[in-house]
Image (tube, rainbow over all chains, first blue to last red; front, top):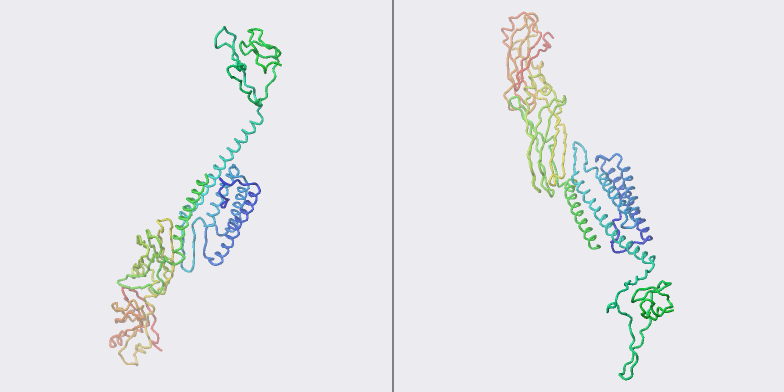
Length: 253
Length: 274
């Protein structure tokens, strides 16, 4: 169980830090769930041989088994990237094993003690169930960590896909507007810009031509269309054979 | 996001701290001795006898020095003798004990020893026995989240009410032959060793009868003997009447009435013709 992991929503975890986290988790969980409990059980059973619980005869075996499962599940949890289903699965599995381990270690909440003429029985199973509830609340944390990172990972993946798609997709030329030939009307008149010639008498001089803009890649067509009537013409033509309009300069080769 | 997780962590930590505090305050008073059940020891058990009934009292106390109230405190006990004969059983509901209070009372019961005697169970009247008390204390603690049960079993020695009885021939004076050469009055001393708890009761009634060898009952006499400890009484016979018999008395029949117990028996006369 990654009890000590930093706030996962903020700091991205690199593979190397995950490895060190997993090692540290394996070490600390082995200490917390196997080594220290075994020492304590040894002390208690030697100091109070009259104390018995439901699992007392094989409690060391149970502690080693469930402690080992907790350590394995926690290590696997920390080894996986936050936000992955594997990490959620191992996190919840480790939590389940912690509950079982706690239940075994506390003898199900029922302890019996015999000394001399006295026989004392404590039934604290309700408190043990409350403790299990408290431990299982960590499941919310595991799920919350999962969901937070899942959003983060999904956003990242989405962005990456978009970038990849943008890199792969070719630039499409903008389709030119097609106009149908029609009768004489202002709307059908030539839309070509006209140049006002230089006239010293009125003191007019045309503005300098704008700097050439970088043009996007355009497919070279084998013909050109008249901007007035839409009739097709050879790129070399200067005027439209259909309506007589002048082709723009840049379309003439 | 980070703030939400931090808040969740803090909430979980707060809940877990509260649970640990609850568990600790529920369990700690028991090993620490703040919650104590003082059940009676053998030397605290007292016995009295009256009108065939044995009255037993045994004190107990329960000290609730913990943090929570004790709920539904109940004391059950059963008492049986060495032959597993059930003498008494009872359930005493005590109820709740607030935190910091001590409740003390006593187990109080009686059993009809005379009825046992009349039913043929004479063991406890004439021989020492061992009475086993099994006391079971059960209660709820920490809002009934903890169930506590303590069973205490103790064996208390029971002294026989009538330890021994019989004629004391060394203090008796009977005719030594037919016709007797020793002088009257003729008498038989009878002793009775009873339990101290019978002291103060009306004295025992002892009736002795001389049984002849061929004629049967020769004559009888009575006396009273004090109860409690070792006492004796002397039955004096009518010597002139006794001298008229030519039969040889060979046995002494006794009829005893001690604290309501009545029984009879016959013993041979020793030293009638030494």
